[in-house]
Length: 326
Image 1 (cartoon, rainbow, N blue to C red):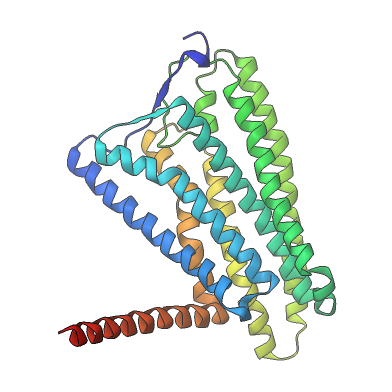
Image 2: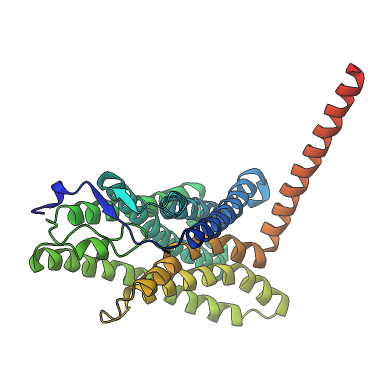
């Protein structure tokens, strides 16, 4: 192959060779996907419907849930379809779209987590200025900046990645389209180094976000330790720990996958690491937030209780109409 234009599809890495294991993987991924859809969907609905959660913190949490829904729905459905139908190919256009969406959503999520760290910093370290610094317009602007930054980052890397001539075959050693795997198909070392250099430059931007988050939490913990009452300290920690846990999970899985030694090229290890950073955070984030946040738990209980009551009333109403018809 002389260039990428002659490639019509990319064969993805399969999880298993036997039909039974393929169906098992399909059922596993389906369960994870449904759990992620349910968890993030409940958070979005609870925040949207409960007026008590119409605050900056929950507004950013709603955006995080939207990003998680999009991220896990970008990679898992194609993997499930391949396992179910015993195929492994993704079209060239589909690969471009998948890489673009995945980069957009995952990078936007990291920028949003940085904004959420600022929200917690202002809430605890500068509570008297919280309303002025984080008004509704400021929150919308910061969320839009996170989404927009993710979009621009994805446009830059996707365009650069697929402008590189590919002549080393078309097989990807991954279950979804990923930049490092596509770069391995590059024709020349200079093209590879060009994208690698762009990734290094981008890494400095993400490093700046990480430093901002770290400094924010150092200031937060210092402020919390100065709170005189134990109840006040516990309340402050309860609003910060879920976000800190989500940030730690996101960064840890991403760093492990990125810093894997080049000498370690096991296909199984590649699958495990990619699964960790692309699937686990979107599926686990709703659980982390709902476990430690009492206001969110109350809103979810109210939402679920309202659903069951409405369903029960609907069943009773239907039974009454049937009786009257008889």
